[in-house]
Length: 126
Image (cartoon, helix red, strand yellow):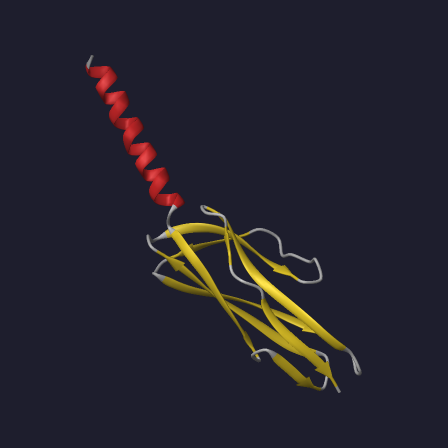
């Protein structure tokens, strides 16, 4: 009987820990530099900055950046150590005379499956 209670207690602790881990990332916000429009000489240097909003920390996350051209970074891992932690990615693109609309988003793969919105930039190369 005692072993059964110990097993139940351990199972309860494990499931509570897994539930807490799964709800640790609440949302992901994103913005760009420059904001919304690049109008100038190319190649354009764009920076995408995401804020990972955690309701429990520290927590290890797996994430990747996804782009409008279908490219994605490999799976990356980092420890979120506060309620709001930033991560960024850069993209250099465009040739003279091109007009492009591009976007990136941050996709948190684990412990939750949550993505930012697509941060779009209009690129006008002169």
